[in-house]
Length: 300
Image (tube, rainbow, N blue to C red):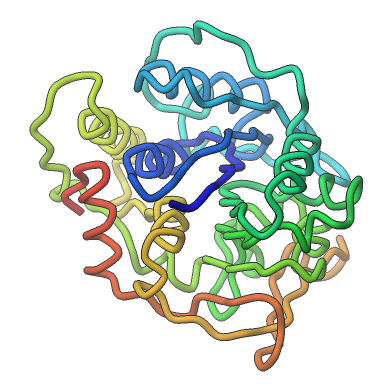
């Protein structure tokens, strides 16, 4: 049983990843921390609460995090994920987020179980960077930080150089990668290989189940983007990395992020060899999809 905090900005692929994590008997979720990114913080926090309520997992606390990156403002993804950041209607949340803020919760929980806590980061790394700024020992306390972000050997998806999450807070990403924490980086190099197509949405289930919800998310996304024939399963692949590390191949590296607004802003730069960051460079696609299908019924 791996103890995890999931730092998230739901987001359609975040929602799929959260359902995977909730359905896994191998993850003990300590809490969700929310961050701006795919949508405004108010929307991502509300979406996290709505999803947990809908799936009857109100036992998991939600901690509101950063509304702004370390510098500047977030570039939201409503155009990609739909209104409010989640392209389906769910009932309003029945509860509010915890009063404790996300960076403080991350630091407190990491300190209470040194060497035992894994962070799965699905959005910009602002909350984690702020936790480390407030308490530098967080980097050593954490067992692992699994990051969905970056593009090392492939083009970005926001600019030719930058992936969405690192572009939204390059300073935070650079700080986390250079903190000395054990980081596993699941970037576009592998995410672009694992995707769903409209023909693969063949779930047969009842409303309120994760299978039905994942079907609705994917079906509505393809309706929103009729010109697209693939939906990259980026955040679900980060959960795969936590559950089945052998599904991906890695190389050790020192990793930095370009923070120069006049340069290749948000570009992830890896110097392979020794280093604290494991960069995913390849993926067993059928094995990864098998894990996804097992946990949320995605026939993809």
